[in-house]
Length: 200
Image (cartoon, rainbow, N blue to C red):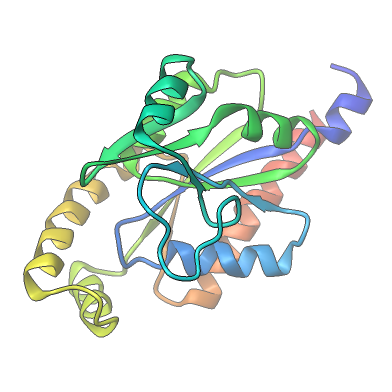
């Protein structure tokens, strides 16, 4: 690999966390601190919610179009959630990493498994799992945000407990006890990986 390629190659950062662990807040703060870093925009078949813009929050397409793109192997990973499809456009991520960008992708455990199988070793990638300090703390966070019913909270807690068991699939784990500290820890992981890659 040439020096030029070393200097310009970016990094795919796969970030996962149970619902309520603050992954969206962590990514938003990272993007403020590093304005040249990017967040992957997923494709979905669900309808836009109030305030969501096509191409900014999601790429909104029909189920027929999604099925077509899926058949063409357009997605790095995809999933069906509550009857709607969600997927990560493969070429957009590849282009970003090849142009030297840090591309952050927030997905679930199943999506990470798909990406580990399809990404290959040609381009750099690091996976990070964000953990709650405890299940009790996670339940409190979900309760305090007042967006789910008690039944939905318990369902999310059950899913979270299964996801936490899969944290060993990830190269790095960060406990989100304090948001500012968690942001610094994830940032440090990314910067160290970039530094390590540049020295090879």
